[in-house]
Amino acid sequence: MDAKELIAQANAQQPQLIAQFKQAVASDQLAHAFLFTGPRGRGQGLVADWLAMRLMCRNVTADGQPDGMCDQCQRIASNEHPDVIQLAPDGNSIKVDQVRFLRDEFTKTAVEGNQKVFIVAGADTMTSSAANGLLKFIEEPVGQQTAILIAENRAQILPTVVSRTQVVDFPALGPEQMQSSLMAVGFNATQAELVRTLTDSSEVAAEWLVDDWFQQAEQAVGNLVTATLKKDDTAFTMVQTNLVPLAGEPDRARVLLAMMAQAWRDILLSRTGDVPVRFSAGSTWQRDGQRYTTATLLAVLDIVLAAPQRLQKNINFQTTVESTVLESQFKLAGLS
Image (cartoon, rainbow, N blue to C red):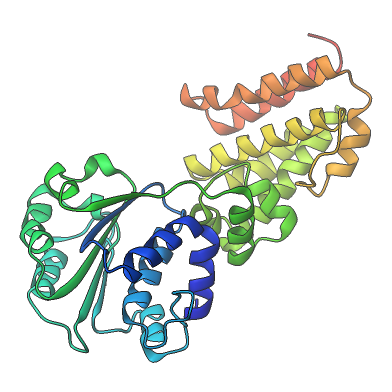
C-alpha cells in the first residue's frame, strides 16, 4: 500500500480518531506514548502509520493531513524510514532480542531531524520482564519520541505500562467503512456484504482470500443450501466433497457454519422484504423459499444456529453438518 492509499484508508476507517489526532498535533498537545487497543482489523496500524507521517511530513496539507507525496511519507509507508521503528511479533510473541533492539533505539536520537516514532504491534505478547524493561523509556523519552503500542488484549498489558500511556480504544468499523475496507483488500461488493455478517475485522477477512478460500466457501455453502431447500439427497455428498476440505482449521469451520446460518436468514427475510445480495444463489433461494411457511423456515434456521454448539461438544465438522442437513430436510418435508 502506497502512502496516499494508506492515508486514505486511515481516514476512511477511523475518521473520528484521525480528527482527534489532527487537533492534538496542531495544538501541540500530543501525548508521547499511546496504547492502541481493540480487535485487529480496526485500522490500528493504519492510524499509527498516519500519525508517523503527520509528525514527519514535509508538506502537511491545509486541513492537517500528511500529503503522502514527500519522501518522508513514502519511506514510512514502505517501512524504510530510519526514524520510524516498527516492531511486530516474531512468531507468536515479541522476543527478548527484539526488546533489546527496541531499548537500544530508545536511547538514540533521531537520524534525520528531531522526531522519532516507535510502533510496536502485538505489544500484548511481550513478557512482563520485557514490558518492564521499556517502562523507563516510555516514561522518560529521549528527545522528541512518540511510542505507539498496539494490543488486541488490553488485559495482557502491565498496569504500569497502561498508566503511562494514553489509551485509545478503536471502535468497530461502521457499515460504510467496513464495506470500503473490504473492497480495498480485494472483495467485490456482493462478497463484502456477506463478509460483514461474518467478521468485523478486514484483516481477518483478507486471510480468507488466500488460495480463493472465500470464493470456494461461498459456492460450496450456496450449493449445499440450494440442495437442502430442494430436499436433494446429493446434499450429503456435497458436505464430504465440497465443505469438509474447506474446514481444515477450527476458525474456518466456524466461518462455514456462520455462512450457512446467514444463508438461511436471507431466505427467511426474503419472504418479508428485500434482502441485500450476499450469495450468488440468492435469487434461486428467494423463489424456492416461497414454497415453505415462515414458521418452517424459522425452524430450519434454529437447527442451523445450533450447529456451532455441536462443534463445541467435540462432534466433528462433517457429522455436525450432515446432521444439520438431515434435520433441516426433515423439517422442510414436514416430518418433524
